[in-house]
Amino acid sequence: MSETKSNKKMVGWLIVIGLIAFLFGVGIYIGNKKSDETPAAETSGETVLDPQAGDLTPPDKTAEPTEPEDVIAAQTASVPGLEIGMSSAEVENLLEERFTPETSEGNQSFNMRLTPQTANGYSLIAVVENMMDDSVKSQEITAMFRPGARDNFVLSEYNVRVQCRRGSNAGNWQTQACP
Image (cartoon, rainbow, N blue to C red; front, side, top):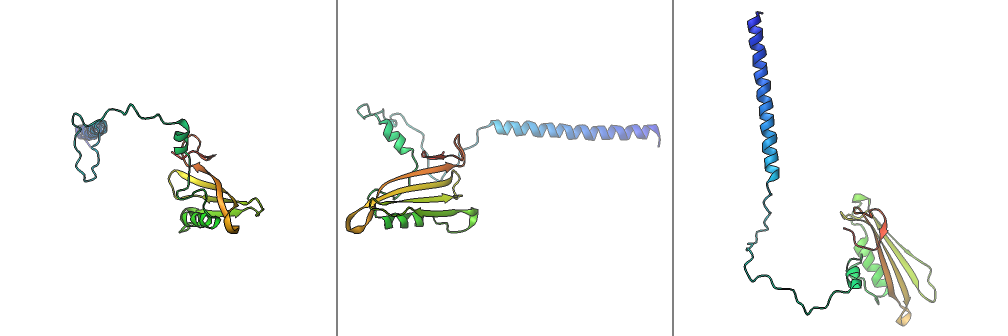
């Protein structure tokens, strides 16, 4: 092969490599340019109106400030439907209906233990593990029952603790709701 043909072949390859590098650079530039743009908000099919002057009302200066205890109570973990004064049978049924896994998916488990009954009452501890929730891993409900009317036991108090999957306290038992 002559030297001229070899040089032409070399120049051809250099042009191809240069063209590929140029296209790669253009692709990176366009990709960065698109990521700098703010993405369009998803619409839910509702017509969104721009705020108009006078739409925003000033704060109610006569309103009472929120007490710190109310703010803390609003952020604690709870079980919807569980209320003080419910019968022990109602509480057990509510917990079983709410937390018994419907499938074996995710290795979920529900366990309920009762302490021996005494004249003062008894307690129930229900533990749900590997919950199918993206924020709560496990939940523990401790319920105290006291004697009520007609040899019935009623819920006198309960506590809820959770283990979160994320956050600064992930994996530890806590009473605050998970982020």
